[in-house]
Amino acid sequence: MIRLSRMGARKQPFYRIVVIEKARARNGRPVEVVGTYNPRTTPTSIDFKRDRVDYWVSKGAQMSERVGKLYSKPAAAPAASVA
Image (cartoon, rainbow, N blue to C red; front, side):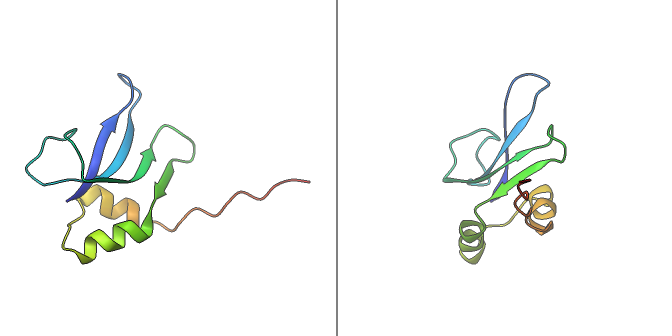
């Protein structure tokens, strides 16, 4: 399963997007970390290793509802530098 694993301090959540066996605890040992999600930045920062997510989905991993919504958002374009 591909789902969120909560990190960060109290009231300052930061999430890792992990591939993990479904029966394991939320913050249990993952098989692989495939991205990060930080809802506290403006705009929220989402970083995926899209090739690895596609690999795991092809092997039968299912995304959680929230990860599916985050994954369907378009990839953020790199910020243009001001010269």
